[in-house]
Amino acid sequence: MTSRRTARLATILSASATALMLTLTGCAGGAQGGDESRLVLGADDGNETHWSVLKQKLADEGIDLEVRTINDGVQLNQGVQDGELDGNLFQHLIYLSQFNVENNGSLVPVGATAVYPLALYSEKYTDVKDLPEGAKVAIPNNPTNLARGLLNLQTAGLLTLKDGGNAFSTPADIVTTKVELLPVDTNQTVTALKDGSAQAAIVNNTQAQKGGLGDELIIFKEDLNNPQLAPYINAFVTRDDKKDDPRWAKVVAAYHSTEVEAAVTELNQGNLQFKTEWTGAQLQDELTSLEDALKAQKG
Image (cartoon, rainbow, N blue to C red):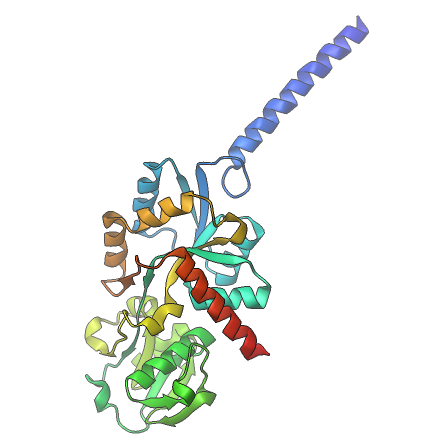
C-alpha cells in the first residue's frame, strides 16, 4: 500500500508541476515567452494616443502589442539587444549607428516612420537674415543634434563647415561663422532662448512643444524632403536575428495607416514628414554607411 500511495503521489506532483510550467510559459509571452501573437515594444512615450490606435489596428491583425515606456535611449536599445524587448521605436538611424558601434550591437531597422524637424527659433527676430553679427545661438550639445544643428546653420547662411560638413561634424569643423554658438543640454535650448542667454536657438520638435514654442517663432526650418536628412529618419528597430519576423511588416503598415498617422501628426502639430517610401533594405544600407563612417572617424 505504501508503494502505491507513493507512486500515486509522485504522479499527482508531476502532473501539477507540468501544469504550472505550461501556465508560466503561457504568461511569459512576447520577447521571452512562446506567445507568437505578442510583441513587446519599447518607447520613450508609451502613453501617447497613437499607441492606443496602433494597438487596436494590430489586434485586428492578430498581434497583441505591449508598449513599455523607458526614458533612457541606451536602455531602450540594450533591452532589444538582450531580448527583453522585441523591438523599439524612438530613434533615428544615426543614433542607432552610434549605439551599434559603441556597444558592439546587432540592432537593425525594419521600417521607417518619419523625420522630425530641428528648427531655429527666435523670440526677438522674425527672419534668419536679421540676426546680427555675433548673435548667440543656443545649440544642443549632444553629438547627433550638434552636427545636425551645424548643418542647419550652414544651410541658413550663418556659418560654413569644412568640406561642407556631415552627420559627424563638430564646432572644430567651422571655417567661418557669423554667430557665436552656445552649446547647451538639449533640455536647456528653450531655456537659453527664453532667459535671454541666446538670441536664437536650435530646438528639436519635442522640446519646442514642451517649451511652448509655436511655429510662428521659427526663423529657419529644414526641408524634410532633403536627401541629406536620411541619417535622421526614425525607424522601428529589432535585433538582426529577428528582422525577418513577418509581424514587422504588419506593424509598419499599421503605423502608416490613416488613423495612426493622423494621431502622430496631431501630436507633433504637423511638424514631421512620413517616410513610407523607405524600404528595410534602404534603411539598412544607410545604417551600414553611417556605421562605417563612424568607425573610420574613430580610427
